Length: 250
Image (cartoon, rainbow, N blue to C red):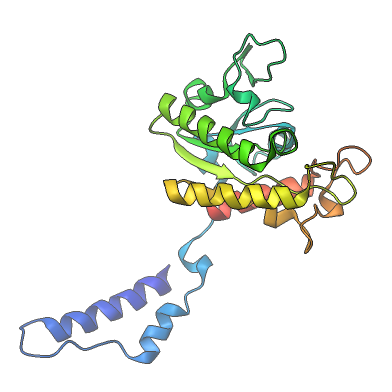
């Protein structure tokens, strides 16, 4: 930070020296001075937030995010006092179903089942992190999943218009566990469409997928906790990487 301030003060001084009084042409920074600013690394400008930053955050998701909640409960240094609004098999689409539907899947929070769109108002959170889609792509395709995502995001913002919204990518599948249209290629296509939508609407998009995938787009084996089952859930190390990514990119 001191380095940033020093460089900025130098450039400000040079600019003011050249323009004050109106008698001299503006003195432009030299190539060396410009390079000094360009050389500042991303970490110089964007330091990671402290875990306490997440004390007023809620994370919405399916069983993948449930695993993160267990990790954070055991490691409070990860995401502070963040709250979780999750349900196994929750997706963008079934989150839109009525509470009394027989096959409904909704988050259970403080002794009651709630609509996903109530995540911020029920928890009192000012920041909401959404990760869904895993349970939509195979059933409704990438287009159907995206349309449901748009609807749910809109519902959340109508209920809590001041919440700061972060949309997280859907995460990868372990090799050998793809089935039908539930493939890493469709996960990639969905994430690409979701990112484009977030960019068009001004929502923050967080690419968790890239942090856990190998060069072919599969979930890295060392990050998978259920290689003999679904091949989509995470180890503690994967959760640590996920939490660190959030702290470095919010």
